[in-house]
Amino acid sequence: MPPRPYVLMEANYKQLLGDRPNVAMLPWGATEAHNYHLPHGTDVYEAQLLAEHAAGEATKHGAKTVVLPTIPYGNDAQQLDQVATISIGTATAAAILNDVVDSLIKQGIDRLVILNAHGGNEFKPLVRDVQARTGMLIIVVNFWQLAPEAIKEILDDPGDHAGELETALLMHLTPDLVQQDQAGPGTMNEIALKTTRQPGVWTPRPWSKVHPDTGAGDPSKATAEKGKRCFEAISEKVAELLVEVSGASKGQLPYV
Image (cartoon, rainbow, N blue to C red):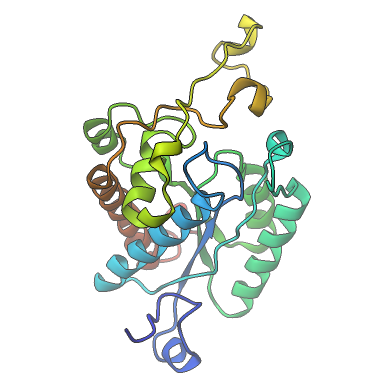
């Protein structure tokens, strides 16, 4: 296949000059254990492949978008006791985001969509700071929160981490990397301090103590067909966003 002009890792300069993008998408994942059956790069595969597919669909509808290389590391501070988990701190994430935005602004790209695939990544304070400093429109998309009606219809229980949703997606996207016969049940040990479980209260989970096989959610009912349907539903939502953001004019809130 020829290089796709909307995927920066493939695109050549002639393609980019011929049809300059006005919105960039930055997939952001993590490198961490996903139960016993999914690869450490699960979040990276999800972010990258969802971004590429959505950008391709958006391009067909006139969006001028480009997918940047995926950031493979996220905040995994509570999982550092698990073999080969890599975690970056908030200051590191802020530095990466600042440098990416500064680079894009110099080239006239003033719209950025962060496609996030890791629940431990918290972008709100970073985005507030960068957007205030540069004027860049920055939109954060947590992919697992898109298309809730479709996901509810397709899946029995999506799960929180390496459960049915992520397992189904990887069975569709990277089937050779899924070792389903090794999967743990993804059960959660009860949090003893009941007051920390109420709405409006949050504290990081000591992950390995709470989730013995590192999973959170039952992956046993996942299938590649379910993954395909979820992938398409989520990608469609991302593509719709890219088309609207790419076609926006200054003054259309929140693009100011």
